[in-house]
Each structure stands twice: as C-alpha cells, then as structure tokens.
Image (cartoon, rainbow, N blue to C red; front, side, top):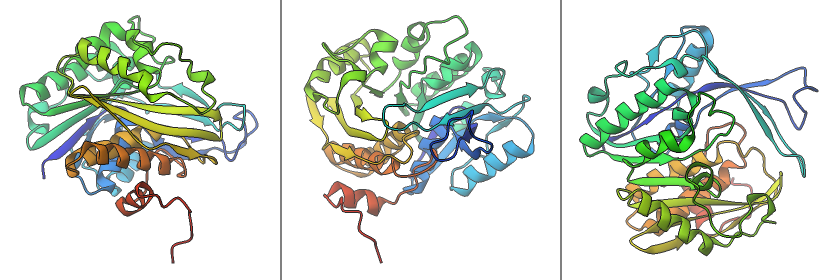
Length: 345
C-alpha cells in the first residue's frame, strides 16, 4: 500500500489535571499535540503507512516528541531540525457550563519559521497516494503558508489525493492576513474538504441559515448543511467530497456528535452519538479525519467510511490526550450498535 503524508506543527501540550483551572494547578500533565500528527498516529494505529513532516528544534523535549511519534509507527525520517523552540499549548478542561480553554505560546516556533525550499517534496511524495494538511499550518506565518503551498502544488502535479481540515483557529491568524486571503488558493487544490459547523463561515462566509453553534441544545439539523456543502463545492470545483462534523453542545461534558458527507449531489448522514461523559474532546476532529481517510481507503461504501470516522471520533472523547488510541475492532463494534461499555474479558 502507498503511504499517506501529513504536514504540520506539533507542540508540547501542558494540561491542568482533573478539572483544575490553570491558575489553580501546581502541576501540569505533559503530552504532545498537533492536528496533522494526530491524524498520522490514527492512520498508523489502523495499519496505514504514514509519514509525518514537521520542523523541530534540537533539544531533549523535541527528541522525546519525535521518538514518541516514531513509537506509534509513524515515519518521521524526513522531519527537519532547526530553529530554537517547540510551540506550547496550555489546556484547561471545562465542566458543565464552563467551557474548556486552550492557550497558545507558539510565536517564533521552529515550525512557524519554516520556508519554501527546505523540504524535498518530490522525494517525500514518491510512493504517496494521499496528502493531508489543515488550516492551522497557514495560520502560523506567511512562510509556513508558502511552504504548504509548495507542498500542495507538488502533490497536485503528482496526482496525489489531497485533503484538508479547515480547522479555523481565531487565536492564530495574527500576521496580517485574513484566512480567506490565504486559504482560498490552498483549498482549491483539494479533493476532499472537511470542516465543522463553523469553519466554512469563519473562513469563507458560507453558513447555514438560522444556525448558532452556541445555541444547539444538542440538536443540529443535518439537512441545513447541504447548502453549505453545495456552496463550498461550487467555490472549489476540484473538491469531490465535502464533509462536515456536527457537534451539538449541551454542556462541556455532554455533546451530541454526528457528520455528513456530500458528493455527486447526494447527502450522506451518519448516525448520531450522545456523548454524556466527555473525558477529553481535544483532537476529536483529527481522530475523525484519520479514521475517514482509513475508511475511504479500505471500505467500498462511502457511508461505511463516514460511519467509521464518526464512531472513531466518538470513542476519542473517552481518551486522554490528543492521540486516538482505539482499535479497528472497537470502532466497528460501536458502528454496529455496541454502546454498552461492558468489560471485555
């Protein structure tokens, strides 16, 4: 099987334990986090050959990070070493009506200073069938956006399937460009576009009528997003499949979760999960994307691929940390209705 390539920044994630606020905690839990790395780990976990490309400084923390990713059977042979610092991400877990919060400290990070010409994309894309990126990368700096454009154009020249997760992060777009100014030229190369209920609106002004992500009460009308998909595919004609994840927020610990896929004029809707006791929702979208890529590669039916991705992401909400460490068997069991959570002996 040919490989999947992902490209983006990974950070040191520092989380307050339990439900403590950051200013209450004397200790922080150390792990690593990054959208494209999360996707790579999910794919490797499902047995898909995957290579992750990033840039990190030369220090013991970065070495620990790269060794950890390698331990998940992700190829990191072409990661760059350079710059002075690994980006930081501070996480505070919300409860009931208090939302979770994320704070970034990634200015001037090694990855944000990456430049076109540093990466041998021709060599990396040899034996590749898929390239995945997210909207976080071009939000970091103009040079990161330019490097991503270099990768996307090279992948398109080689007829490699290209996917993106729009991943709008308001806190990151700080270098003087609006998301639409940068993202439009990048997204036009994509065969598959994924976003959540807000991404298309925040980046391109495309939204469903009478929808407020903060006022869902757990209920989202999937049909109302058909127009969003149609508008996105009209704006980006190369796009073959448009996927939207739909989170109904009842409170910080209780969400509903489902998804839709639109292609060939048809809307496919997944089953909806009621996630009543969320352990860690950060990385949920990445777990969906990794599972969707796996499903589209391995299932003959796109409905099955969508259901696999939705179920995998549902399970991720029970896993601490960014990586989704669940098996294919566990995901397929949930897909078929086994929601009891009984002990397996």
